Length: 200
Image (cartoon, rainbow, N blue to C red; front, side, top):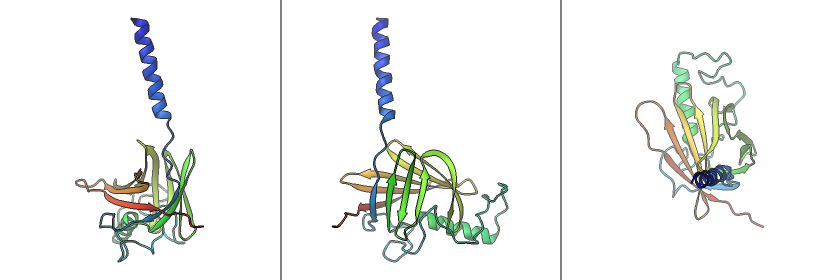
């Protein structure tokens, strides 16, 4: 009886290990925003896209000061009206849809390349890393979770923006954007992206 139980436990353990060892889904490819299939909200342009903003987490302007709370000293500073305005611009930057991007991935990271040719690389080990955004320096944590890519951008007052990327069938990419923290829970914004087929 004990032998059978031990064998059963070994089989279960091997099965669980196999599940955890499964590679993440392949998000590789070029993706174009489908405004008609996406939730309304957070759009920067009249057509439901924001073609003017730089992609989240990668590109800043020279001379931009970091967003309050992510300075070199690591000490929280009181939020001035100017910093509050900058924070609002940053949140808008984070929730506005990107018109088109290309994803490449390997075992340790996922990279996003945008129409202006610039690329942002995120480690997928869940550890914090800093990036320069248009409206401040942001800290991100990126990981694979239950077959989906989750990227959390931490703000300086306990709030964060969580982006969850998942593949859907027929082949498509869904991005859910949710603002976490503060009072109450907000409904995630659902963005749908269609694959961009290569043309000969």
